[in-house]
Length: 284
Image (cartoon, rainbow, N blue to C red):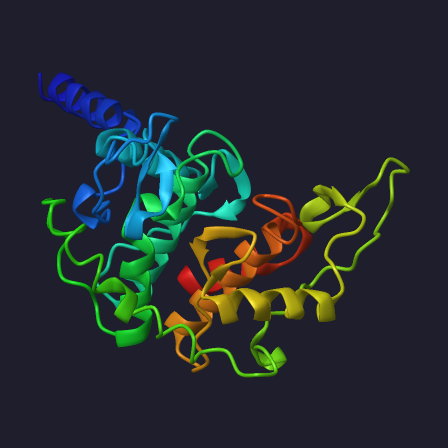
């Protein structure tokens, strides 16, 4: 009988340990609130009001449950499912660096909901304003409040925060020493059809990455404007100190500037550089 009991116990232990552990989605409490309601002041042509009256699709932002589901899928994959060149870090601690990383991932997940560059613009939320607050103040944001009503009221006051990005750029543009190196040369192993090798043999346009000088010029223009010139819904912060949070922010802005060189989603993929690997090394 003792032998039988021991055998049964062993089988139970093995059975329990063999049950696969399912990955859970991101903690909803860590997902920033949109701060905007869909369908405000419709024009009748599919456009509605976003932040500061910027016109956005009336379907934006999406339902919070749908967004969290999409965000969770990206975080579980380690990159944006609909735009694999975009990493999706989502650290869970309360540090400024982690809040910045979560905000950047939320913005990219929102913009790529249905495909590369096919989603909702950042102007459909207060994400960019929250990100600017984190970068400019260097202090963690308070726990997000679900009430969306306060978002439209501060809108007139938000312009006061806009001057903040303007002092960031210097007359000569960003400091080249702070711009991450591509880590990849253009034109490697051409196939003869316009494709060449990027990171890990991923096929990229042979013209990618661009020359460093032209990239820095484009990046400088974005930083000077406070947002991506070719994709205005994407913020372009570029802090100059040596903190981990600032390094993460500079890499995120470099990635978005690279991907939007000639228009929304019309640029070079992240696989044309080691930017994603450098970002992963910083965020873990």
